[in-house]
Length: 215
Image 1 (cartoon, rainbow, N blue to C red):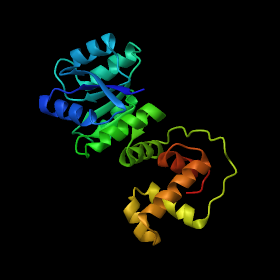
Image 2: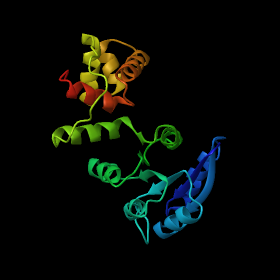
Image 3: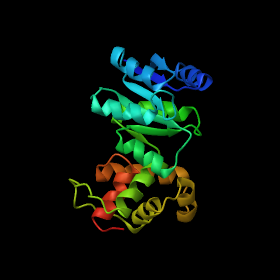
Image 4: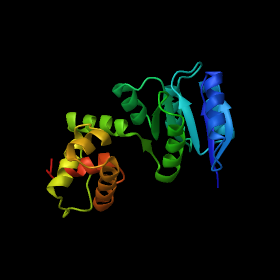
């Protein structure tokens, strides 16, 4: 079944461009669009999509106000925020308001499709940068750490080197150069570690290592 997607953005050309881009995919179906926050809420109540792509800066109701209303009224929809503003504080505010994903408008068009697929399949989508923002927030504010089912996992020194590099906000290319591996090898190592620990992404891997004093 195709993923039902609606787009809420007050910039007509950008909104139509996103719709045109997503219409190329057979597993995406556009079922609505809105040019302001009021129209977005009306759309969600009359023909709710699976996922709403939501701009933050809109007239009548801002994207943040739409997020707050969705939470208040328990509207069953997943939200991917689209914004030109990707400062740490903005990303954190959106996530804490209930967003399931955050995509900067500076990203390539294919990033929106990746976000939609991830949210539909996993319930969330956050880029590597967004994961690091949330990790830093957890560590700096000493927020509660998650409880992990697996407690007897061991890592080689090379694996710990990779996890430390991830925690220091280094890119795959930077880690590959430092460890003298190819980027593909680094990606493979990271995915194998994520699978072994039983987490969903790199931030879970890093949190596990912090929780059990590996780093």
